[in-house]
Image 1 (tube, rainbow, N blue to C red):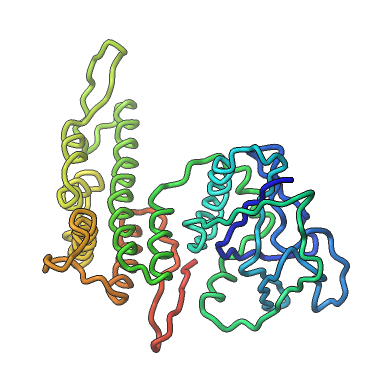
Image 2: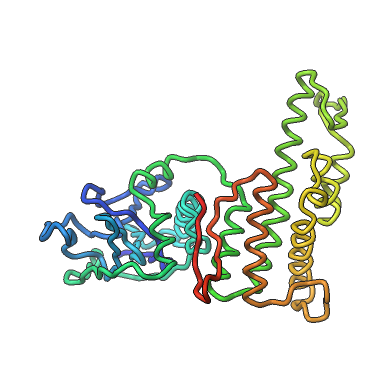
Length: 339
């Protein structure tokens, strides 16, 4: 008897006949992640329909002779039911986060789970089929563009690097928009702006400190401070601005660190990011923006505008801006990924 943890988020995988049945979860030797399409290697019945039976009903789309699994069942099995399932959930959340970071599949930015208790062995749905559907929806278009292959996944498992927090938060903003939760869209957009701003300035500051140690004098006012543990390097102006409010950071810290002004370069973007952050603060502190005339009203149009402007802000900060952005085209929601 064991517990299975089912991931409910739609994930897009580019499927080939040579994909392995099992992909190991590197953090724990007794866990394995089932291939999204199979519980066993399948006999090939037809060249144009290479899947015999799967671990559940999957939606599969075909484009240019390539097969993509959409909305597949991904199962994490526990050989020992006494394992701490929430510990395992955290591990799997990390894996999904890595997939989201690599592909920008925003639907897995906030993993959703279901728990199943089984008797002896996993209960495969022996006679289930794979539904092949025509490519119609724009969201499917996006999932195909961001589909992850087995090679991608193997690289993700080996990647030990910490990911930038703002990426996951901005993906959560996009996911919230897709769910029609525009309040959370603004919350996540405001958070992403604040974190990304701090990260971008920290990168510039650390580079300046490294140059200072090498004798290069830049625009920062870095001082050598002797302590009991040795010499440390600090810029009091940077330290002061870093601890200031977001509006001060947006106007002054960026100018000090990057040598360019968002207010001068892109005054409209400066005003929009300020408004997004004000909206986020009003939601956090009062739960409403109704009495704040300078904040955004919470609706689809404004949430759409917020996402587009955050993506532009990330680009101005010289950070990763390669995110899917929703656009309304002829009244129909389109998802555009700029690669």
